[in-house]
Length: 322
Image 1 (cartoon, helix red, strand yellow):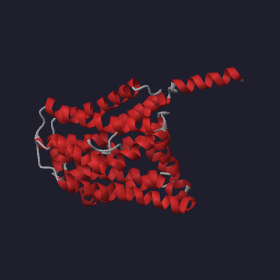
Image 2 (cartoon, helix red, strand yellow):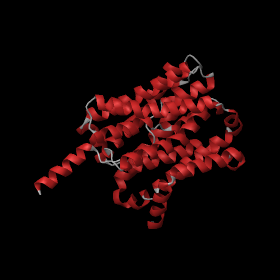
Image 3 (cartoon, rainbow, N blue to C red):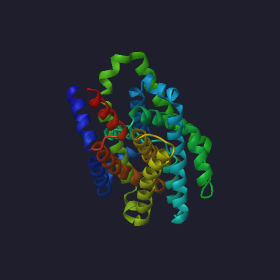
Image 4 (tube, rainbow, N blue to C red):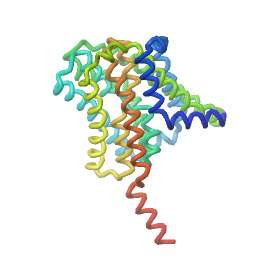
């Protein structure tokens, strides 16, 4: 198990590179990953189950001990990213399928890797976990409603079916993971050490499968949709940071909100696009998956070398007292 834990940390460290390599291979040799396509929802369910296995009662206590911070983070996420997505679709006059795809990504809950990035960035990890958990549990209600509101002008949205699918592949696996973790406790702690490795492999396979299924479309995709996705992600970081700062949050909390706002669960977007729309709708989510691993890890590395100011003040105070 120590070997698996070490391997998981190593794979996590080079997660962005692994995803890029898999995406490139799938783009050039799509048949290598086409077998993954029918299993995208299953793989996403495994990732969500793993997320539930890592959640503890203390993580949910944060929601009640400081509800204002969690509320700010969740509201910022579900206001900023959908609003940016809709604005970009109008400004760049995107074709119908790509517009739906961009909005779909914008309405997704926080990404599964944002907590890891928050930890590396020396952000408020407890807050990040709470925001991610709450945004994910609210997804069955908020996602269909937001997609219906924002993308309804382009296509008829099966809101009820979306609700049921999100519950099935997101909420149920998470709740099962939480229940097992609560009932078995220490008995499953060893198993949780393998979860980062399992999640990384699952995300890489999802990206590979969808890139393979859309290889010809991706090859023909103009620079426009790539630019739109890049702007979407970066604007999410910027507005997430500025919003939390304007609302009086400290630096560590700002970092948590920034990453929880800007990093979407694009794997969910891919799964829903493949299930309810067309493969072309999944293209923005695929590009987002690859891009956010690079920006998230880069931002985390930048912040990891810079201690939050409130922590610096505490350290100086302790040194003075000593």
